[in-house]
Length: 225
Image 1 (cartoon, rainbow, N blue to C red):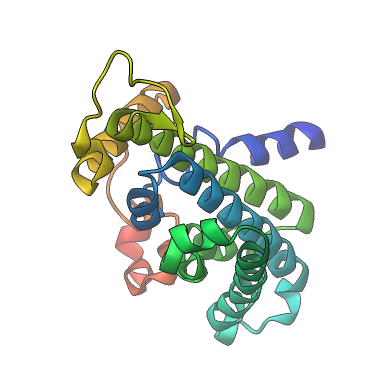
Image 2 (cartoon, rainbow, N blue to C red):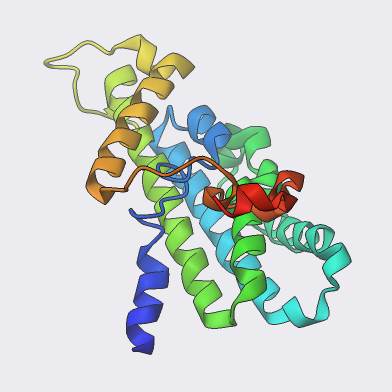
């Protein structure tokens, strides 16, 4: 029974509750970074590492963090891991650090990571929180890397820097810019939602993964929807 529960916590973030393609979180870095498959993979791995580590620490320390300062405490924990990841990328993959630019340190305010800290890690034990972070991180990594592969092939004729379409297709430049990113993003959202077969949901705070961070969630009428 416990094994099934742990498996469910891990797999939910891949398709059913994919943070990028189902919950529509982390849209900014997804659109900004995904013109390159390598950059997308790098961002996905960095965010996943931070998510797993922050979930682990927050779940372990939740009883010692006063409710009145939980959000600043969560951000401090997340920022610490982001700093570690950023230093590692700068030291070992400087080209990736240059490509990701400001979006690497901005993982600190990524709503996927803060949302999982508030909605899951702060309310659950360590092991489920690790699995939740791993599953959500993998879901984000797969989503952004898929976008990067599609956009790089169509927009530049390459994938991970290797030419793949030069003999039979000219690059379609629009896919290398933001407009093409929106098109691919919408297409992937449609595909994943079709696979997940999610029922129509009523709007309101109850369906929002970060409802507790918003003052509107105090409205009982919204929560009861």
